[in-house]
Amino acid sequence: MLTGAAALFVVTQSPAAEQPPAGAAEKIAQVLPDKPYAKPEQPRKLLLFSKTGGFRHGSIATGKLAFTELGKKTGAFETVISDDLAQFEADNLKNYDAVCFLSTTGNVFAGDPTREARLKENLQKYVKSGGGFVGIHAATDTCHEWPEYGKMVNGFFDGHPWGAGTMVSVKVEPGQENHPLVAMFEGQNVDFPEEIYQLKDPYDSKAVHMLLRLDNEKTNIKVGGVKRTDGDFGIAWARHWEKGRVFYCSLGHNHEMYWNPKVIRHYLAGIQWALGDLKAEVKSAK
Image 1 (tube, rainbow, N blue to C red):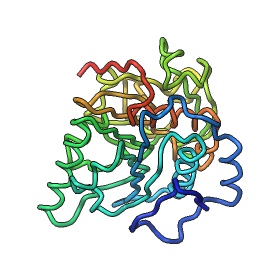
Image 2 (image 1 turned 90 degrees about the vertical axis):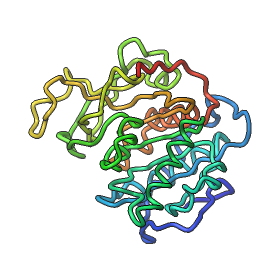
Image 3 (image 1 turned 120 degrees about the vertical axis):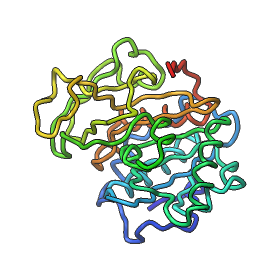
């Protein structure tokens, strides 16, 4: 279902039978923007990685399709889809402008301990030296055993009190209505059924540039499973990680997120910022 030069496939460990639901391609095509938010300074390449050591989301295939076609339609980036851990060898990482963890889960680098340590160090060096990192949905349910990863992505998954069928309301962080990464929401809430995460340490909403939050006044926050007592349910943010750029958005459990016109534009803006093309002020307190 992926077409064109932007859909570059490498050896993958993902289940071969994964396919988006019927009609997904058409729905995605209808909402894709015609142009990027910023003209790429040079041809950009995004590594799309979705290896899972735990739960595997059915929407991963839809995300692969959406991001590939998003890059192709806008000309913002070329997508390389691979779950091959060899991509995280230093000589291979340098071929990419950003790495996207698309609903990864568990210790995605598990295996030979020496290799695991090396690949994790490679990823940290890559981002800290100026690379981009994009985390979508379950990227925060990944590598719980790796504290530095949790600090980089800003927290670890601690349950989803709001399940996939729960109506939720997502709001733009107050004061950020005109920020390039969320300007497409025009300061308005978006309401839809979606699985919303709560996060645990090292989650710190003050350590990142918060972009989207759960609107606690328009969402039932008395559902079962809520552990946080501070009502702090961040959904999307950006941060600098030394010289690198990290963008995370927890939306993406439901297939429909990938053909929601505002969400897909939010993804594009975040990816282009992580790639280094979309200029935006991002404050990180830590």
